[in-house]
Image 1 (cartoon, rainbow, N blue to C red):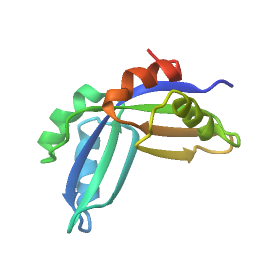
Image 2 (image 1 turned 180 degrees about the vertical axis):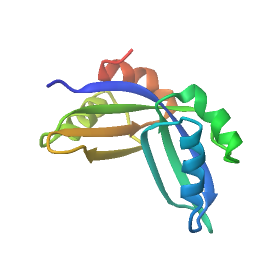
Image 3 (image 1 turned 120 degrees about the vertical axis):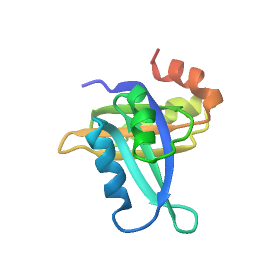
Image 4 (image 1 turned 90 degrees about the vertical axis):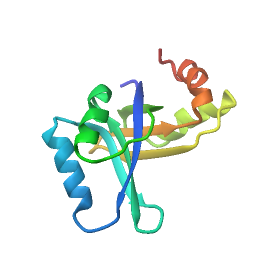
Length: 138
């Protein structure tokens, strides 16, 4: 099974790092019909947590976030790579980018069950066009 590569929109937001805040924000976004391709959160500045969001419907997120009292960052572009899991699946995509002279800023990858994997690749926005060409995405 060949890998699938898509350009995706990425937003960040800062929330208080306290019990229930993530549930409150994500429940409000759920109620607004927001579904995520990728989502992770981690502690950041003192008393804050950072949300990294890859929405399925990018156009709907800013309005839903505002209604939930969440200030989101400017939209950035990232790449979602998915396919059949195998040793080196993520290394293959990173090797293509390295050969093109593109430095990856961050990556998040997970196994999606017995045979699937997915990864979000973040890179400097100045390299998006070159990365898209390298990864075979329009």
